[in-house]
Image (cartoon, rainbow, N blue to C red):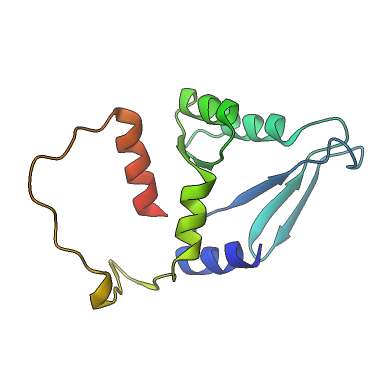
Length: 137
């Protein structure tokens, strides 16, 4: 949660984390704010998956859903959201965060790579959407 709060502070993204409370939660779903991140615990008897699906279907804007659960990923894609795997997002969190200054990110010279030449492989619509989402993260 600390790393996510640091990430949110730099990137400014709206972040919601959903935890399971179906085995030991309270009778009602609980919401709190920790480090600017909305934290939801599902209620007793309800899995986090149901809460996540409800959030996905209630939002009119496109969401970026971080999950490695295939059922949630399929549901998110079918509802117009973009899915990034948990591993890919952890890789992003593991890198030093770049402080954004207006339109440009400050990038160390050693991080810059020249564009590759040649014919790139054509990406599927899902992969293109995922690539766009990853560039925002």
